[in-house]
Image (cartoon, rainbow, N blue to C red; front, side, top):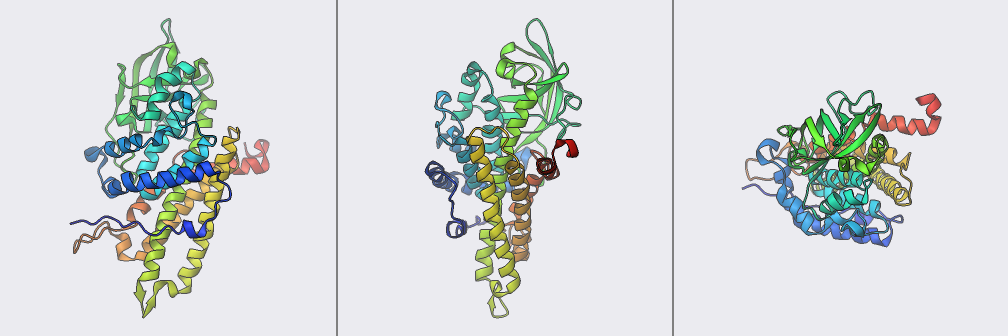
Amino acid sequence: MTTSVVQPIRQADRLYHDLLSPAETTGVRKRVRQIAADVVAPAARRIANGDERVDGFPRDVFEGLAAAGLFRLPYKSEVGGDGLSHPVTATAVAIEELAYCSSSVAAIFDVHCILAGNALAHGTEEQQQAWLTHVADGSMVGAFATTEPEASSDLSPQAIQTVANRTDQGWVLNGHKRWISNSPVADFIVTLARTGDRLSMFIVDTTLPGVSVGVPDQKMGNRGQLTADVRYDNVQLGDDALLGGVEGQGLRHALATLTLGRIGIAAAGVGMAQAAFDHAIVHLSERRAFGRPIAANQHWQFLMADRATEIENARTLYLKAALRRDAGELFPEPEAAMAKHYATRLSVDLARDAVQAFGGLGFARELSADGTAGPVEAIYRDSKIGEIYEGTNEIQKWIIARNIFGKEITG
């Protein structure tokens, strides 16, 4: 019988001293950690090793998070949220704690709350009451669609081929989106489209005629985070579907949302890095070779010292970016780009280190002899996507460079 992966000792509780987070945020971290242990951890192995087209969306976990009130964290009380004073910081630490147990679940939370939910926060009061209240209580699943087959990092009006044309009744939407997380189960998709020579965002009810969602993609990792193509074929939308009620604000809304998303992805990277680190520390301390613990070798001592320092830096970076956003800065650069680039690279590096530390068991999903679960291979598979989505790390370096040299030089 397969055994579950045992959760290791939290090394961050000994090594990291959080002098940035307000008391409200540290309380959220403690609460989310318990929710993740109760709701996410028991399902994490099933999700990590599942097949997107067979096992589908982890609805039981999503509903468990909703029942625990976790989706209320980012939002004001007027739409059923918790009305926190530092909602972005609280949301980021929640993502770190979820990612510690499951990258897929953290990604689902990110798309539902940060991307779809935050985009709706740019909407009118009527739109927020009609949609955002359901995001907060988990009665609807949200998705966010900017990427297309030929437009991903480039979200200029020239690149976006999804088009909304105005009619006497409202709008007609046509186009093709790709890699849209949560789309196979989404009740609505906040969608970026070209309107004339500008971009606008629309709230698209997925039950409308002309909306079709493909079968889930099969991916190396993050298998619980379902992605699929979405097609719009003459979808009739009313004026109330135009996000914020103002045409031409789509790029600004999208970039502000994606900047916030990068903070979330950075937090997820820290969560995965911390999990890989914690597993490796236990194994290196307990596993013996040549008559002594593996950790007695200076190679591992020095490497883990470097990694502990990098985790410290990565966590501080995403918290600083989140606190700046909570202070009212819509684009908290360069910290958001730095945090995303640094933390996601670190998660890949540490996952690889952990696989190496565990040797054969690090490479295994499960031992046939006794059902022992491989403790870190899923982290290795899951971590890579963090360097790619919500702005590749190459794009993040460009953003950082632009802050150094200025747009007139970097473009």
